[in-house]
Image (cartoon, rainbow, N blue to C red; front, side, top):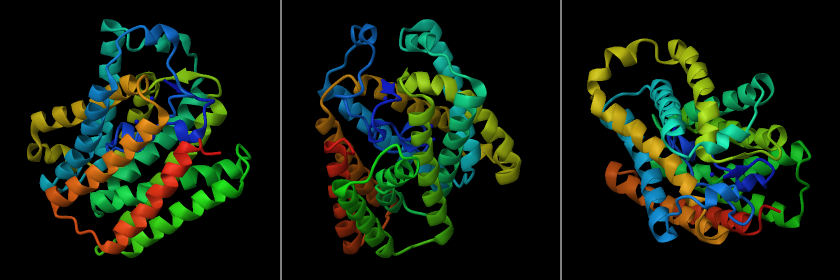
Length: 341
């Protein structure tokens, strides 16, 4: 989960958070894609707690990296291969935590000003959110963290293609160059993968499609609404938890309950706690720095995550993958610095 930002639904799609970075990163997930110049929290929130960029950016990076590596450790190291169950647990934890914060802090005051309709706004976006989280986590069962992170670089391309299809955005020469750069880089990264596993690869590709569709759906259905990561989680965590719970019997069955002793209560709560902390950090993150600084921080975070996965899990990386990922990153930086236009 690893369940993803004051997000304004009318800002460019590339400025919106990814589910994989929110709860995924539940894994989970990935960088927080925010253009600070275009997405600012309401004035009344800006007057509250502001954490300096030099502090909050490292905290956000640490939370984002930790939740992905922690999830991978739970799935592989602790032999608890039940991503739907873990994602559901994260969402239940977030549902409770957001309501506690709503009653005890001002972090969720923005929820009072938002009215969402169940069938039109909450259910369709929640279903896409659940699909993205579950499929992304399933990919971690068979693929390395480093390879998945390289594949996630394709996310802007998926967003652009869906935006073109819905005529939200018109293609131009610059966007075509960006699509070609990122696509070429991802192809080289996939081609250079030593331990390529088709099912995991398809799961990650499907997760990217769900996530891109979710962001486009937000652009269409929530146009003009302002939702930061915690407010978004406040609304969507409950419905996603219910959807996931309905899926568990078909994917995990009762096995997670019989094997809870493999992880224990401490791991379950700390794992969900770090995932939720990522969302809290994202709230403060969006009020500091510039779009370029956060873009570079996201790139650095991804590089550190890939390096950390190599050290923690011994994931092999080939020279071709490094070259391909470098090309993808150049396209990603171009995409972010130009506002995806």
